[in-house]
Amino acid sequence: MKLGYACINLSMANTFRTLRLATLRTQGLPYLQTLVDANMALLAAILRWNREHDIMMYRLSSDLIPFGSHAEVELTKIAFPLQDEIKSLTQGMRLSTHPGQFTLPSAAGEIWERSIKDLQYHCYLMDILGIDGDIVLHGGGVYGDRSATAERIQRNLLSLPVESQRRIRLENDERSWSVLDLLPICEKTGVPLIVDSLHHQINGNTPLTDLPWTSIFATWRDRKPKLHYSEQDPAKRSGAHSMYVDVNAFITFLASVSGCAYDVMLECKGKEQTLLKLRQELAAITTAGPPEIARLINEKKIEGFSVRSI
Image (cartoon, rainbow, N blue to C red; front, side):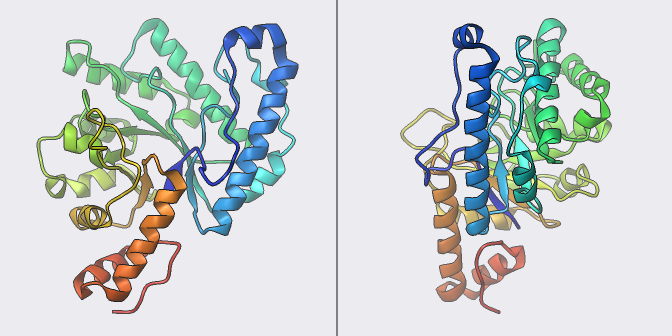
């Protein structure tokens, strides 16, 4: 099992650079290129850091090319001087992107057209960097008619070019589209389904243990399934992610998911620090914890630490 984190590495001083549309219009492509150069240098540094710490799953920032899906940005005019190094660093890693909340498979008209352009940008970015990764989307709105919208999601997904279709994964959300709402759509379109544990806790009518895991994992076909794990921040609104992971809650999550091997993206505010802390705590349990729990952790073959034999 790979454990991953999203976008920002808190162990580094720098963050990915972005800009306002007004600045793009006044400064133009030369300035945008300087931001892309800085972002690619930071991406390469994060990938090197990940490798040094045995972290082989990571979510790319959608802002690597600021306004990359905007009509005023010509992607083919942007250079990628670190392209070869990044391609080398990504070998063997599981990488993904998660386009923003306005990229909606459920939409129609102009909103769907903008969504297509955003998906094209993410595919282009992955192609340039030599990545065959996951593009994760939520279903979007229901628009007052769940059945009609579900059919539109299916039509929209199947209308996309093959290079987009093969990368897209649907994820349940905390309001509109539950795991059981999305499963039939995924089965009909061939799009893999990602189960997000916190979203299911908020927007799900069955315990995690009782989900149809065999059917969910079957949507991945010959790919290794991926799940999202996070916990509620008790001091914030419903759905807000916590800073770290409670190791006992995570073990309960592992025990709740039956079936084949899978990877887990940690969606926590603590980013890579959450991942390192969780790995240390899991390793400690395999050494001094109850044998049945140590056995469970061993069975998951979590990358990044050695576990004792049971």
